[in-house]
Amino acid sequence: MTIVYISAGVLIGACAGFLAQYLWSQRRVTSARQRAKQIIEEAHREAQGIVREGKLEVKDELHRLRTEFEASTKELRQELQKEEQWLAQKKETLDRRLDLIEQKEQGLMQEREKLVREKQALEDERGRIAKLIEEEEQALQRVAGLSREEATQRLLTKLEREVEYEAATLVRRKQQEALEEADRIARDVITQAIQRCASEHVAETTVCAVSLPSDDMKGRIIGREGRNIRALEQETGVEILIDDTPNAVVISGFDPVRRETARRTLERLIADGRIHPARIEEILGKVRREMEREIEETGTQAALELGISGLHPELIKLVGRLKFRTSYGQNLLHHSMEVARIMASLCGELHEDIMKGKRIGLLHDIGKAVDHEVEGAHAAIGADIARRYNEPKDIINAIAAHHNETAPENRLAVLASAADAISAARPGARSESYELYLRRIEQLEKTAMEISGVQSAFAIQAGRELRVLVDAEAVDDNQTICIARQIAKRVSDDVQFPGQIRVTVVREKRVVEYAR
Image (cartoon, rainbow, N blue to C red; front, side, top):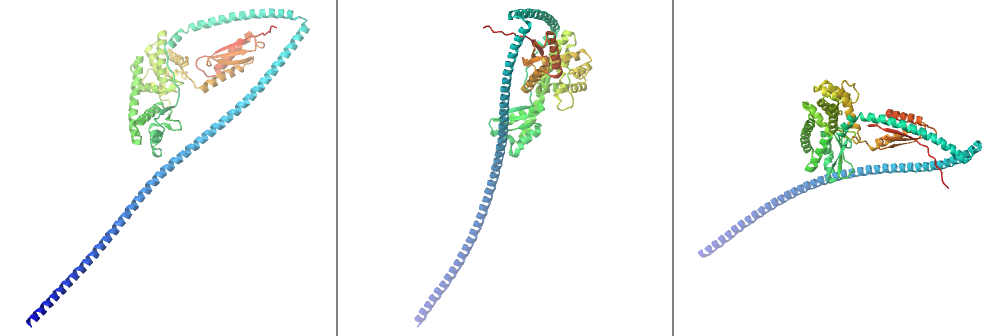
């Protein structure tokens, strides 16, 4: 029994242990399942967070890409608008040129038709005149009762008398030329002064061009929304013109110093490659300081070269500024130095103060260095400047009177006016534009043609001589002299020209016969 009880106890204990182990195992499994469920839930939550973050990053990236795309599209749209505007301007220009060409072509056709009509009228007139001459000869023969030989003999006799008269006139003309030659010899002093001086001439202009390495540089000069070109124009006070001229931009301005400063600044910016407002300001400051030094050195060098001392520093700077000014193609610094040398020559011949003469010549156009900043004539401005810096009274008067705007008070003032005229009027000293040259030539010929008895007029030798042909039947020799003087007076009163113009009046009678 005991064994049975023991066996039953062991069995019960084993069953209880098994049951306890089973229950413990079940508890662990349940705990593990709960833990796994928690881990899965946490993993799920983390996955959702990662997905949300990824969506946000993708959304930010899409927004950034969209912004960049819109910016690039906007720039491209602006470029396309600029191209469209440029094309529209180009088309407008071409249309204007085409209209101008069509107008010129119509004008040429009308002129051609007019010439054809005039030629036909001239041929008809020649035929009528020939017929009248023939009828007149026949009528003369009938009235005079002379044969052709007798009429020829009388005509030859008349021609001999006319030749004798012309010979006497030629003698009188030679006498007049001898008097003129004597007057020319009296001007040797001025001639010598001219021969000792020579200066180059340059094209007078208010613009200058700057070469570019490529047309792409134009966009960099303009800058984003035009900020570079706007900064350059505001800082320098000039206008930058960018058109379709290949590999070049144009700088326009009336102040030559500002124009030269802008040109040098732009050239340095192009060579440097960095073009932005801050860099423009930096380069411009350096160029301005260099220009100030160059102006002062140029004025000092001019004074030293002429042997002039004691000039006020501000006067030296104004003399240096003349290097960048031109007038009728003459560089004003070269012109002033040339006038100074002519003054020295004239003063030496006439026993005047040579050093004062040089000083007057160098300073006579000093007003042109600032005439774009001050109202008034440059002679009066120059006199005020000389007075401000305590120049002697005779020098001030010579500067003020060198264009006869003020009465000269001494011989130096008269010599200054003469020296300035010599430098300006001698051949090759000044250049003029093609349009002004043509207008002057037309005005000369028109002035001569307005005189009664003139058949034709031709301006020759670049407008320095006016050759006039008169009607030999309507004008005699004495009237020819009067016509020459009348034309010369009208030209002096009505036409503006440098130097002098020679008026030559030609009266000739031509007789043509044909041997058969």
